[in-house]
Length: 414
Length: 141
Image 1: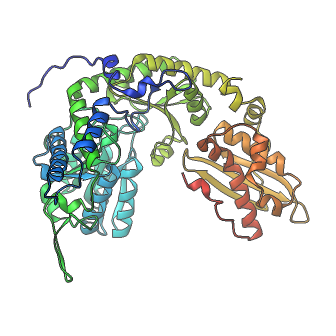
Image 2 (image 1 turned 90 degrees about the horizontal axis):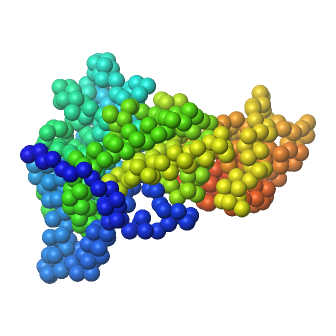
Protein backbone atom coordinates (compact mmCIF):
# COMPACT_ATOMS: atom_id res chain seq x y z
CA UNK A 1 0.00 0.00 0.00
CA UNK A 2 1.38 3.40 -0.95
CA UNK A 3 1.85 5.73 1.97
CA UNK A 4 0.28 9.08 1.38
CA UNK A 5 1.00 12.08 3.50
CA UNK A 6 -2.29 13.38 4.73
CA UNK A 7 -3.08 16.89 5.74
CA UNK A 8 -3.51 17.54 9.44
CA UNK A 9 -7.04 17.02 10.62
CA UNK A 10 -9.15 20.19 10.74
CA UNK A 11 -11.27 19.32 13.76
CA UNK A 12 -13.52 22.44 13.79
CA UNK A 13 -14.37 21.74 10.14
CA UNK A 14 -15.06 18.07 10.84
CA UNK A 15 -17.16 19.04 13.84
CA UNK A 16 -19.48 21.10 11.65
CA UNK A 17 -20.51 17.83 9.96
CA UNK A 18 -22.04 16.56 13.22
CA UNK A 19 -25.49 17.97 14.02
CA UNK A 20 -25.34 16.91 17.68
CA UNK A 21 -22.96 19.76 18.42
CA UNK A 22 -25.62 22.29 17.42
CA UNK A 23 -27.63 21.46 20.54
CA UNK A 24 -26.50 22.83 23.91
CA UNK A 25 -26.54 20.65 27.03
CA UNK A 26 -27.53 22.41 30.28
CA UNK A 27 -27.27 25.64 28.29
CA UNK A 28 -23.64 25.01 27.36
CA UNK A 29 -21.98 23.75 24.19
CA UNK A 30 -21.60 19.99 24.23
CA UNK A 31 -18.11 18.69 24.98
CA UNK A 32 -18.47 15.07 23.96
CA UNK A 33 -15.63 13.10 25.52
CA UNK A 34 -17.21 9.64 25.39
CA UNK A 35 -16.41 8.43 21.89
CA UNK A 36 -14.78 5.22 23.15
CA UNK A 37 -18.25 4.30 24.32
CA UNK A 38 -20.04 5.41 21.17
CA UNK A 39 -19.33 7.98 18.48
CA UNK A 40 -21.56 10.75 17.21
CA UNK A 41 -22.95 10.60 13.66
CA UNK A 42 -22.15 12.91 10.75
CA UNK A 43 -24.93 14.35 8.63
CA UNK A 44 -23.66 12.29 5.66
CA UNK A 45 -24.58 9.05 7.46
CA UNK A 46 -27.93 10.32 8.73
CA UNK A 47 -28.92 11.65 5.30
CA UNK A 48 -27.78 8.54 3.44
CA UNK A 49 -29.72 6.23 5.73
CA UNK A 50 -32.85 8.29 5.37
CA UNK A 51 -32.49 8.29 1.60
CA UNK A 52 -31.85 4.54 1.60
CA UNK A 53 -35.02 3.93 3.58
CA UNK A 54 -36.97 6.27 1.31
CA UNK A 55 -35.74 4.92 -2.03
CA UNK A 56 -34.00 1.56 -1.70
CA UNK A 57 -35.27 -0.41 1.26
CA UNK A 58 -36.56 -3.97 1.12
CA UNK A 59 -35.35 -7.26 2.53
CA UNK A 60 -32.06 -8.38 1.04
CA UNK A 61 -31.18 -11.33 -1.19
CA UNK A 62 -34.12 -13.45 -2.34
CA UNK A 63 -36.35 -10.65 -3.68
CA UNK A 64 -36.79 -10.60 -7.47
CA UNK A 65 -38.11 -7.06 -7.66
CA UNK A 66 -36.11 -3.94 -8.32
CA UNK A 67 -36.32 -2.51 -4.81
CA UNK A 68 -34.94 -5.72 -3.26
CA UNK A 69 -32.10 -5.68 -5.75
CA UNK A 70 -31.26 -2.12 -4.81
CA UNK A 71 -31.36 -2.98 -1.10
CA UNK A 72 -29.11 -5.99 -1.71
CA UNK A 73 -26.67 -3.87 -3.72
CA UNK A 74 -26.51 -1.35 -0.87
CA UNK A 75 -26.00 -4.06 1.73
CA UNK A 76 -23.35 -5.97 -0.23
CA UNK A 77 -21.68 -2.72 -1.23
CA UNK A 78 -21.19 -2.02 2.47
CA UNK A 79 -19.61 -5.45 2.90
CA UNK A 80 -17.06 -4.55 0.24
CA UNK A 81 -16.35 -1.27 2.03
CA UNK A 82 -15.69 -3.18 5.25
CA UNK A 83 -13.39 -5.55 3.37
CA UNK A 84 -11.41 -2.65 1.91
CA UNK A 85 -11.25 -0.84 5.27
CA UNK A 86 -9.47 -3.75 6.97
CA UNK A 87 -7.80 -5.07 3.78
CA UNK A 88 -9.41 -8.51 4.05
CA UNK A 89 -8.60 -10.84 1.15
CA UNK A 90 -12.26 -11.45 0.35
CA UNK A 91 -15.66 -9.96 1.16
CA UNK A 92 -16.85 -13.55 1.70
CA UNK A 93 -14.84 -13.52 4.91
CA UNK A 94 -16.68 -10.47 6.22
CA UNK A 95 -19.66 -11.39 8.40
CA UNK A 96 -22.15 -8.73 9.44
CA UNK A 97 -22.95 -8.94 13.14
CA UNK A 98 -24.89 -6.76 15.56
CA UNK A 99 -21.74 -5.57 17.36
CA UNK A 100 -18.29 -6.72 18.44
CA UNK A 101 -19.79 -8.69 21.31
CA UNK A 102 -21.76 -10.86 18.91
CA UNK A 103 -18.71 -11.38 16.69
CA UNK A 104 -16.56 -12.48 19.63
CA UNK A 105 -19.31 -14.77 20.94
CA UNK A 106 -19.60 -16.26 17.45
CA UNK A 107 -15.91 -17.23 17.50
CA UNK A 108 -15.94 -18.39 21.13
CA UNK A 109 -18.97 -20.65 20.64
CA UNK A 110 -18.62 -21.76 17.06
CA UNK A 111 -14.85 -22.30 17.01
CA UNK A 112 -14.30 -22.82 20.73
CA UNK A 113 -16.81 -25.58 21.43
CA UNK A 114 -15.37 -27.71 18.61
CA UNK A 115 -11.71 -27.04 19.22
CA UNK A 116 -11.12 -26.78 22.96
CA UNK A 117 -10.76 -29.42 25.63
CA UNK A 118 -8.88 -30.36 28.80
CA UNK A 119 -5.19 -29.50 28.62
CA UNK A 120 -5.85 -26.65 26.19
CA UNK A 121 -5.18 -23.04 27.10
CA UNK A 122 -7.40 -20.06 26.35
CA UNK A 123 -5.27 -16.94 26.78
CA UNK A 124 -6.72 -13.45 27.15
CA UNK A 125 -5.29 -10.32 28.78
CA UNK A 126 -5.98 -8.42 31.98
CA UNK A 127 -7.01 -5.49 29.79
CA UNK A 128 -9.97 -7.16 28.13
CA UNK A 129 -13.45 -5.72 27.91
CA UNK A 130 -15.97 -8.19 29.33
CA UNK A 131 -17.03 -8.93 25.73
CA UNK A 132 -13.67 -10.59 25.03
CA UNK A 133 -13.32 -12.02 28.54
CA UNK A 134 -16.57 -13.59 29.66
CA UNK A 135 -17.35 -15.63 26.48
CA UNK A 136 -13.87 -17.21 26.59
CA UNK A 137 -14.03 -17.80 30.34
CA UNK A 138 -17.37 -19.57 29.96
CA UNK A 139 -16.40 -21.61 26.87
CA UNK A 140 -13.21 -22.69 28.67
CA UNK A 141 -15.36 -23.85 31.59
CA UNK A 142 -17.68 -25.79 29.33
CA UNK A 143 -14.89 -27.50 27.44
CA UNK A 144 -12.56 -28.11 30.40
CA UNK A 145 -9.88 -25.86 28.91
CA UNK A 146 -7.70 -23.67 31.16
CA UNK A 147 -8.31 -19.92 31.12
CA UNK A 148 -5.26 -17.67 31.62
CA UNK A 149 -4.73 -13.91 31.49
CA UNK A 150 -1.57 -12.20 30.28
CA UNK A 151 -0.76 -9.81 33.15
CA UNK A 152 -0.12 -6.09 32.85
CA UNK A 153 2.51 -3.97 34.56
CA UNK A 154 1.75 -0.88 36.63
CA UNK A 155 1.59 1.25 33.49
CA UNK A 156 -1.16 -0.95 32.11
CA UNK A 157 0.99 -2.58 29.44
CA UNK A 158 1.15 -6.31 28.79
CA UNK A 159 4.03 -8.20 30.36
CA UNK A 160 5.20 -10.23 27.37
CA UNK A 161 7.91 -11.89 29.51
CA UNK A 162 5.10 -13.90 31.07
CA UNK A 163 4.23 -15.67 27.81
CA UNK A 164 6.69 -18.55 28.25
CA UNK A 165 5.35 -19.32 31.68
CA UNK A 166 1.78 -19.23 30.38
CA UNK A 167 2.65 -21.55 27.49
CA UNK A 168 4.17 -24.05 29.93
CA UNK A 169 0.76 -24.56 31.54
CA UNK A 170 -0.74 -26.42 28.57
CA UNK A 171 -1.36 -26.27 24.83
CA UNK A 172 -2.20 -22.71 23.80
CA UNK A 173 -5.15 -22.96 21.41
CA UNK A 174 -6.48 -19.42 21.27
CA UNK A 175 -5.16 -15.97 22.14
CA UNK A 176 -7.82 -13.26 22.38
CA UNK A 177 -6.81 -9.65 22.95
CA UNK A 178 -8.02 -6.17 22.30
CA UNK A 179 -5.90 -3.99 20.03
CA UNK A 180 -6.53 -0.92 22.15
CA UNK A 181 -7.72 -1.04 25.78
CA UNK A 182 -11.08 0.71 26.09
CA UNK A 183 -10.24 1.74 29.67
CA UNK A 184 -6.56 2.70 29.61
CA UNK A 185 -5.98 3.42 25.92
CA UNK A 186 -3.02 1.01 25.94
CA UNK A 187 -2.05 0.04 22.38
CA UNK A 188 -1.35 -3.67 22.62
CA UNK A 189 1.39 -5.35 20.55
CA UNK A 190 -1.15 -7.45 18.66
CA UNK A 191 1.45 -8.22 15.98
CA UNK A 192 3.73 -9.84 18.57
CA UNK A 193 0.81 -11.67 20.18
CA UNK A 194 -0.28 -12.97 16.77
CA UNK A 195 3.23 -14.24 16.02
CA UNK A 196 3.39 -15.91 19.44
CA UNK A 197 -0.07 -17.45 19.03
CA UNK A 198 0.91 -18.93 15.69
CA UNK A 199 4.20 -20.27 17.12
CA UNK A 200 2.08 -22.12 19.67
CA UNK A 201 -0.25 -23.44 16.98
CA UNK A 202 -3.03 -21.21 18.33
CA UNK A 203 -5.46 -18.87 16.61
CA UNK A 204 -5.39 -15.11 17.24
CA UNK A 205 -8.65 -13.26 17.88
CA UNK A 206 -8.50 -9.46 17.90
CA UNK A 207 -11.12 -7.22 19.49
CA UNK A 208 -10.57 -4.14 17.33
CA UNK A 209 -13.50 -2.11 18.69
CA UNK A 210 -11.18 0.75 19.73
CA UNK A 211 -8.76 0.32 16.83
CA UNK A 212 -10.66 0.20 13.53
CA UNK A 213 -12.31 3.64 13.97
CA UNK A 214 -9.02 5.30 14.95
CA UNK A 215 -6.10 3.82 12.99
CA UNK A 216 -5.30 1.92 9.85
CA UNK A 217 -5.99 -1.78 10.29
CA UNK A 218 -4.77 -4.42 7.84
CA UNK A 219 -5.72 -7.97 8.74
CA UNK A 220 -3.35 -9.44 6.16
CA UNK A 221 -0.36 -7.48 7.45
CA UNK A 222 -1.30 -8.36 11.03
CA UNK A 223 -1.87 -12.00 10.04
CA UNK A 224 -4.47 -12.57 12.77
CA UNK A 225 -7.29 -15.12 12.36
CA UNK A 226 -10.36 -13.18 13.52
CA UNK A 227 -10.97 -9.47 14.01
CA UNK A 228 -14.16 -7.72 15.05
CA UNK A 229 -15.33 -4.13 15.15
CA UNK A 230 -18.60 -2.24 15.42
CA UNK A 231 -20.40 0.41 13.39
CA UNK A 232 -21.53 2.72 16.19
CA UNK A 233 -17.97 3.55 17.24
CA UNK A 234 -16.93 4.55 13.70
CA UNK A 235 -19.61 7.21 13.16
CA UNK A 236 -22.09 4.62 11.87
CA UNK A 237 -25.49 3.60 13.26
CA UNK A 238 -25.93 1.14 16.11
CA UNK A 239 -27.02 -2.45 15.54
CA UNK A 240 -24.40 -3.36 12.94
CA UNK A 241 -20.89 -4.69 13.31
CA UNK A 242 -18.49 -6.85 11.39
CA UNK A 243 -16.38 -9.90 12.06
CA UNK A 244 -13.59 -10.86 9.70
CA UNK A 245 -12.35 -14.44 9.84
CA UNK A 246 -9.88 -16.52 7.89
CA UNK A 247 -11.78 -18.48 5.27
CA UNK A 248 -10.31 -21.93 6.14
CA UNK A 249 -11.44 -21.50 9.74
CA UNK A 250 -14.89 -20.10 8.90
CA UNK A 251 -15.51 -22.98 6.49
CA UNK A 252 -14.75 -25.57 9.17
CA UNK A 253 -16.91 -23.90 11.81
CA UNK A 254 -20.56 -24.73 12.40
CA UNK A 255 -23.09 -21.87 12.21
CA UNK A 256 -23.55 -19.83 15.37
CA UNK A 257 -27.23 -19.00 14.90
CA UNK A 258 -29.63 -20.92 12.72
CA UNK A 259 -32.67 -19.93 10.73
CA UNK A 260 -33.34 -18.26 7.42
CA UNK A 261 -30.65 -17.14 5.01
CA UNK A 262 -27.92 -19.38 6.44
CA UNK A 263 -29.14 -22.62 4.82
CA UNK A 264 -28.56 -24.29 1.47
CA UNK A 265 -31.29 -26.89 1.80
CA UNK A 266 -33.54 -27.99 4.63
CA UNK A 267 -35.08 -31.43 4.83
CA UNK A 268 -36.72 -33.19 7.71
CA UNK A 269 -33.59 -35.37 8.15
CA UNK A 270 -30.87 -32.79 7.68
CA UNK A 271 -29.90 -29.25 6.75
CA UNK A 272 -26.91 -28.09 4.76
CA UNK A 273 -25.34 -24.70 5.23
CA UNK A 274 -25.18 -21.78 2.86
CA UNK A 275 -21.80 -20.54 1.63
CA UNK A 276 -19.75 -17.84 3.38
CA UNK A 277 -20.58 -15.34 4.71
CA UNK A 278 -24.29 -16.21 4.77
CA UNK A 279 -23.72 -19.34 6.84
CA UNK A 280 -23.14 -16.96 9.75
CA UNK A 281 -25.91 -14.48 8.98
CA UNK A 282 -29.13 -16.14 10.09
CA UNK A 283 -32.26 -14.02 9.90
CA UNK A 284 -32.89 -10.60 8.43
CA UNK A 285 -29.84 -8.45 9.10
CA UNK A 286 -29.69 -4.75 9.99
CA UNK A 287 -29.82 -3.73 6.34
CA UNK A 288 -29.96 0.06 6.41
CA UNK A 289 -27.55 0.03 9.35
CA UNK A 290 -25.00 -2.00 7.39
CA UNK A 291 -25.49 0.46 4.53
CA UNK A 292 -25.00 3.34 6.98
CA UNK A 293 -21.79 1.69 8.22
CA UNK A 294 -20.54 1.77 4.62
CA UNK A 295 -21.26 5.51 4.41
CA UNK A 296 -19.53 6.04 7.76
CA UNK A 297 -16.47 4.20 6.45
CA UNK A 298 -16.45 6.55 3.43
CA UNK A 299 -16.67 9.52 5.77
CA UNK A 300 -13.92 8.41 8.16
CA UNK A 301 -11.53 7.31 5.44
CA UNK A 302 -12.26 10.59 3.67
CA UNK A 303 -10.98 12.46 6.72
CA UNK A 304 -8.07 9.99 6.85
CA UNK A 305 -7.27 7.35 9.44
CA UNK A 306 -3.64 8.45 9.83
CA UNK A 307 -4.80 12.02 10.44
CA UNK A 308 -7.38 10.81 12.97
CA UNK A 309 -4.79 8.72 14.82
CA UNK A 310 -2.40 11.67 15.01
CA UNK A 311 -5.15 14.07 16.11
CA UNK A 312 -6.17 11.77 18.95
CA UNK A 313 -2.57 11.20 20.01
CA UNK A 314 -2.14 14.97 20.35
CA UNK A 315 -5.37 15.30 22.31
CA UNK A 316 -4.43 12.46 24.68
CA UNK A 317 -1.02 14.03 25.28
CA UNK A 318 -2.63 17.42 25.92
CA UNK A 319 -5.22 15.93 28.28
CA UNK A 320 -2.55 14.10 30.26
CA UNK A 321 -0.39 17.21 30.44
CA UNK A 322 -3.27 19.39 31.65
CA UNK A 323 -4.71 16.84 34.08
CA UNK A 324 -1.31 16.09 35.61
CA UNK A 325 -1.05 19.79 36.56
CA UNK A 326 -3.70 18.98 39.18
CA UNK A 327 -1.97 17.32 42.17
CA UNK A 328 -5.14 15.47 43.23
CA UNK A 329 -5.61 13.72 39.88
CA UNK A 330 -4.32 10.18 39.29
CA UNK A 331 -4.01 9.13 35.64
CA UNK A 332 -3.95 5.43 34.79
CA UNK A 333 -2.22 3.71 31.89
CA UNK A 334 0.83 4.20 29.69
CA UNK A 335 2.53 7.47 28.68
CA UNK A 336 0.94 9.56 25.94
CA UNK A 337 3.24 8.33 23.17
CA UNK A 338 2.12 4.75 23.73
CA UNK A 339 -1.63 5.20 24.02
CA UNK A 340 -4.69 5.92 21.91
CA UNK A 341 -7.15 8.77 22.55
CA UNK A 342 -8.42 7.45 25.88
CA UNK A 343 -7.52 8.86 29.31
CA UNK A 344 -8.82 7.29 32.52
CA UNK A 345 -8.28 9.08 35.81
CA UNK A 346 -9.49 9.64 39.33
CA UNK A 347 -9.99 12.91 41.21
CA UNK A 348 -8.68 12.37 44.72
CA UNK A 349 -11.24 10.39 46.67
CA UNK A 350 -14.19 11.84 44.75
CA UNK A 351 -16.25 9.05 43.23
CA UNK A 352 -16.23 9.01 39.38
CA UNK A 353 -20.04 9.19 39.36
CA UNK A 354 -19.88 12.47 41.23
CA UNK A 355 -17.14 13.78 38.93
CA UNK A 356 -19.20 12.86 35.86
CA UNK A 357 -22.28 14.46 37.40
CA UNK A 358 -20.53 17.77 37.99
CA UNK A 359 -19.03 17.64 34.48
CA UNK A 360 -22.47 17.00 32.97
CA UNK A 361 -23.71 20.30 34.38
CA UNK A 362 -20.87 21.94 32.46
CA UNK A 363 -22.04 20.26 29.25
CA UNK A 364 -19.17 17.76 29.35
CA UNK A 365 -20.00 14.11 28.65
CA UNK A 366 -17.56 11.57 30.11
CA UNK A 367 -18.00 8.00 31.26
CA UNK A 368 -17.67 6.98 34.90
CA UNK A 369 -17.53 3.41 36.10
CA UNK A 370 -15.65 0.19 35.48
CA UNK A 371 -16.00 0.45 31.68
CA UNK A 372 -16.89 -3.27 31.46
CA UNK A 373 -13.37 -4.15 32.62
CA UNK A 374 -13.86 -5.34 36.19
CA UNK A 375 -10.82 -7.66 36.21
CA UNK A 376 -8.70 -4.66 35.19
CA UNK A 377 -10.25 -2.51 37.94
CA UNK A 378 -9.40 -5.26 40.43
CA UNK A 379 -5.83 -5.38 39.13
CA UNK A 380 -5.53 -1.61 39.55
CA UNK A 381 -7.09 -1.83 43.02
CA UNK A 382 -9.89 0.62 42.22
CA UNK A 383 -13.65 0.37 41.74
CA UNK A 384 -14.06 2.83 38.91
CA UNK A 385 -12.48 5.64 36.93
CA UNK A 386 -13.60 8.72 35.07
CA UNK A 387 -12.75 8.33 31.40
CA UNK A 388 -12.36 10.94 28.68
CA UNK A 389 -12.04 9.67 25.12
CA UNK A 390 -11.53 11.52 21.86
CA UNK A 391 -12.37 11.24 18.19
CA UNK A 392 -12.04 13.16 14.97
CA UNK A 393 -14.40 15.95 16.12
CA UNK A 394 -12.74 16.49 19.52
CA UNK A 395 -11.11 19.83 20.29
CA UNK A 396 -8.38 20.94 22.74
CA UNK A 397 -10.89 23.48 24.15
CA UNK A 398 -13.01 20.56 25.35
CA UNK A 399 -10.04 19.34 27.37
CA UNK A 400 -9.61 22.80 28.90
CA UNK A 401 -13.25 22.69 29.97
CA UNK A 402 -12.75 19.16 31.32
CA UNK A 403 -9.84 20.36 33.48
CA UNK A 404 -11.91 23.26 34.82
CA UNK A 405 -14.80 20.93 35.58
CA UNK A 406 -12.53 18.47 37.36
CA UNK A 407 -11.23 21.31 39.56
CA UNK A 408 -14.79 22.29 40.34
CA UNK A 409 -15.70 18.72 41.31
CA UNK A 410 -12.68 18.43 43.55
CA UNK A 411 -13.32 21.75 45.22
CA UNK A 412 -16.92 20.84 46.02
CA UNK A 413 -16.58 17.17 46.92
CA UNK A 414 -12.91 16.43 47.57
CA UNK B 1 -30.24 27.48 43.16
CA UNK B 2 -27.61 25.90 40.91
CA UNK B 3 -27.92 22.29 39.77
CA UNK B 4 -24.96 21.47 41.97
CA UNK B 5 -26.60 22.86 45.09
CA UNK B 6 -29.83 21.06 44.27
CA UNK B 7 -28.25 17.62 44.10
CA UNK B 8 -25.39 18.00 46.53
CA UNK B 9 -27.36 20.00 49.08
CA UNK B 10 -25.75 20.64 52.42
CA UNK B 11 -27.29 17.74 54.29
CA UNK B 12 -26.14 15.32 51.56
CA UNK B 13 -22.60 16.66 51.71
CA UNK B 14 -22.65 16.43 55.49
CA UNK B 15 -23.68 12.78 55.44
CA UNK B 16 -21.16 12.06 52.66
CA UNK B 17 -18.25 13.66 54.48
CA UNK B 18 -19.25 12.45 57.96
CA UNK B 19 -21.14 9.20 57.39
CA UNK B 20 -23.11 7.91 60.38
CA UNK B 21 -22.59 4.29 61.17
CA UNK B 22 -19.52 3.76 59.04
CA UNK B 23 -17.79 0.56 60.09
CA UNK B 24 -18.62 -3.04 60.79
CA UNK B 25 -20.34 -4.96 63.57
CA UNK B 26 -18.51 -8.12 64.62
CA UNK B 27 -20.97 -10.97 65.07
CA UNK B 28 -23.85 -8.99 63.60
CA UNK B 29 -27.37 -10.45 63.80
CA UNK B 30 -27.97 -9.64 60.15
CA UNK B 31 -25.61 -8.78 57.33
CA UNK B 32 -25.51 -8.66 53.54
CA UNK B 33 -23.44 -7.36 50.67
CA UNK B 34 -24.80 -5.43 47.71
CA UNK B 35 -23.30 -4.35 44.40
CA UNK B 36 -24.26 -1.76 41.86
CA UNK B 37 -23.13 -3.29 38.57
CA UNK B 38 -23.39 0.09 36.85
CA UNK B 39 -20.37 1.45 38.64
CA UNK B 40 -18.92 -1.47 40.61
CA UNK B 41 -19.84 0.11 43.95
CA UNK B 42 -20.14 -2.29 46.87
CA UNK B 43 -21.69 -1.93 50.28
CA UNK B 44 -21.82 -4.29 53.26
CA UNK B 45 -24.50 -3.72 55.87
CA UNK B 46 -24.43 -5.01 59.44
CA UNK B 47 -27.37 -4.98 61.84
CA UNK B 48 -27.65 -5.86 65.52
CA UNK B 49 -31.02 -6.36 67.21
CA UNK B 50 -32.19 -5.61 70.76
CA UNK B 51 -32.77 -8.52 73.14
CA UNK B 52 -36.26 -8.91 71.62
CA UNK B 53 -34.58 -10.05 68.38
CA UNK B 54 -36.76 -7.65 66.44
CA UNK B 55 -35.94 -4.02 67.24
CA UNK B 56 -32.99 -2.63 65.27
CA UNK B 57 -30.37 -1.55 67.78
CA UNK B 58 -27.52 -0.59 65.52
CA UNK B 59 -26.71 -0.46 61.80
CA UNK B 60 -23.25 -0.06 60.31
CA UNK B 61 -22.03 -0.09 56.74
CA UNK B 62 -18.75 -0.36 54.89
CA UNK B 63 -17.78 -0.22 51.24
CA UNK B 64 -17.26 2.33 48.57
CA UNK B 65 -19.59 4.51 46.59
CA UNK B 66 -20.41 7.91 45.24
CA UNK B 67 -21.59 10.82 47.36
CA UNK B 68 -25.23 9.98 46.73
CA UNK B 69 -24.96 6.32 47.69
CA UNK B 70 -22.81 7.05 50.76
CA UNK B 71 -25.05 9.86 51.97
CA UNK B 72 -28.24 7.86 51.34
CA UNK B 73 -26.91 4.90 53.29
CA UNK B 74 -25.80 7.16 56.12
CA UNK B 75 -29.27 8.75 56.27
CA UNK B 76 -30.83 5.30 56.20
CA UNK B 77 -28.82 4.29 59.27
CA UNK B 78 -30.32 7.17 61.24
CA UNK B 79 -33.78 6.47 59.88
CA UNK B 80 -34.12 2.83 60.87
CA UNK B 81 -32.54 2.74 64.35
CA UNK B 82 -35.10 1.66 66.93
CA UNK B 83 -37.61 0.44 64.35
CA UNK B 84 -38.76 -3.13 63.92
CA UNK B 85 -36.89 -5.39 61.50
CA UNK B 86 -40.13 -6.60 59.96
CA UNK B 87 -41.24 -3.06 59.19
CA UNK B 88 -37.87 -2.00 57.75
CA UNK B 89 -37.68 -5.15 55.61
CA UNK B 90 -40.62 -3.78 53.63
CA UNK B 91 -39.84 -0.08 54.00
CA UNK B 92 -41.22 1.83 51.00
CA UNK B 93 -38.34 3.41 49.12
CA UNK B 94 -40.32 6.65 49.00
CA UNK B 95 -39.65 7.14 52.70
CA UNK B 96 -35.90 7.23 52.09
CA UNK B 97 -36.31 9.29 48.92
CA UNK B 98 -38.30 11.87 50.86
CA UNK B 99 -35.52 12.08 53.42
CA UNK B 100 -32.91 12.48 50.67
CA UNK B 101 -35.14 15.19 49.26
CA UNK B 102 -33.45 15.81 45.92
CA UNK B 103 -34.42 15.01 42.33
CA UNK B 104 -32.60 11.88 41.12
CA UNK B 105 -32.08 10.64 37.57
CA UNK B 106 -32.67 6.88 37.03
CA UNK B 107 -28.95 6.16 37.29
CA UNK B 108 -28.50 8.13 40.49
CA UNK B 109 -31.63 6.49 41.91
CA UNK B 110 -29.78 3.18 41.78
CA UNK B 111 -26.91 4.80 43.70
CA UNK B 112 -29.34 6.06 46.34
CA UNK B 113 -31.09 2.69 46.70
CA UNK B 114 -27.98 0.52 47.10
CA UNK B 115 -27.93 0.78 50.91
CA UNK B 116 -31.66 0.23 51.40
CA UNK B 117 -31.78 -2.76 49.06
CA UNK B 118 -28.84 -4.33 50.86
CA UNK B 119 -30.30 -3.64 54.29
CA UNK B 120 -33.59 -5.28 53.29
CA UNK B 121 -31.67 -8.27 51.98
CA UNK B 122 -29.82 -8.58 55.30
CA UNK B 123 -33.06 -8.44 57.28
CA UNK B 124 -34.82 -11.01 55.11
CA UNK B 125 -31.81 -13.32 55.39
CA UNK B 126 -31.79 -13.00 59.16
CA UNK B 127 -35.54 -13.57 59.42
CA UNK B 128 -35.52 -16.39 56.90
CA UNK B 129 -38.18 -14.66 54.85
CA UNK B 130 -37.98 -14.64 51.06
CA UNK B 131 -36.88 -11.27 49.68
CA UNK B 132 -39.80 -9.71 47.79
CA UNK B 133 -39.90 -9.52 44.01
CA UNK B 134 -37.78 -6.74 42.62
CA UNK B 135 -35.47 -6.50 45.59
CA UNK B 136 -32.57 -7.35 43.32
CA UNK B 137 -33.57 -4.61 40.87
CA UNK B 138 -30.08 -3.17 41.24
CA UNK B 139 -28.99 -5.91 38.90
CA UNK B 140 -31.27 -4.60 36.20
CA UNK B 141 -29.02 -1.97 34.74
